[in-house]
Image 1 (cartoon, helix red, strand yellow):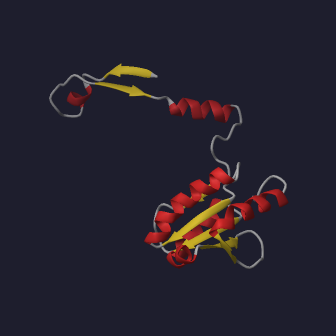
Image 2 (cartoon, helix red, strand yellow):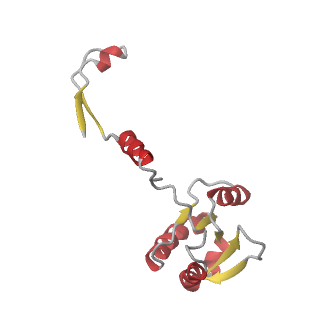
Image 3 (tube, helix red, strand yellow):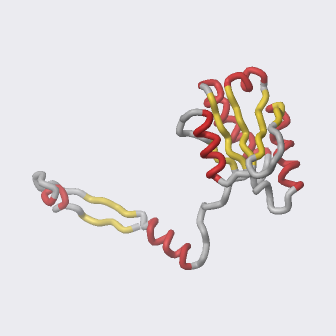
Length: 149
């Protein structure tokens, strides 16, 4: 970690001189070193993308994502946190590279169901009880050498 004095910075920006300090983590250097070693960092494609539609689904979705990560070691989940329409969320799911979308709406939360939608194959979507979703995702990971994606 690099520490520096920035006493002259406020004056350079047009303010009155003031004592100041700052620090730098150096993350750009770490990223560059990883790139030079051909290590991609955290660019792994998610196995599933969790699309959330409605306030009850958004609240339940974050808890569901954590529960799935705890229950299925190695499962990579990307959760929609940016709002947006259902259509835009499915576009994000497709761009993420995930092989499946887990769709959770307010109605599904009330019924304790999730919709599992394949994104990379021609198969129909299906509803899965929330209580059995982790087991279903684990079965899918086992069925595909190297995971869902």
